[in-house]
Length: 228
Image (tube, helix red, strand yellow):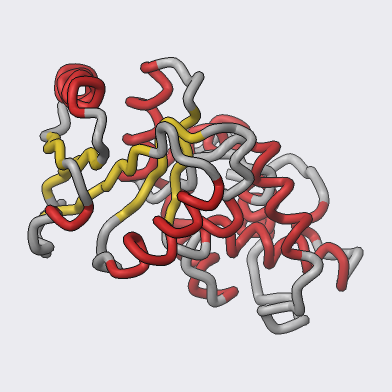
């Protein structure tokens, strides 16, 4: 039985956040709660999948850094996190990803993008602009490889899907390109994560990037037509 979903919107801009709560309730049919502070988060209910939307409006990079390390760092690991009202110049995405943040909504994003992104996050996808993801991947190359420098025993289909994950494609986009259902994509991604020992799409993309450098013949680096 699938767990119930709940969105918790956290931030001091009560009027704006109440409007977002109403919008998500009407457009995405999601129960939402508005809180002024993360300290007001209720205890975790293991029967509920929570997505916490953290309001970054008016925060500079130093404020965001402190919030990521002090407030989000003390939160329950079971929660899914996303930042909204984020400045595109904040340059905090790489650090946020290490703090379990999996979604980024910017201060000039349209409202319909928020509803779409929230649903994607509940489906286990990473929600961030492709350009930002590429920047995070490039920055990661300066770090020592975290993953074993050897190719995993991936099938041809898994290699195709991993290569698309590394470009920032979501499950629906992958399914459309490979002519398979999003559910099938999700199953393949679950198996890929187990085989390469990662826990999310960003880590999988980093792993794929390292394989491409270490093994130029890695099948996932090639854009081939998929099989059913």
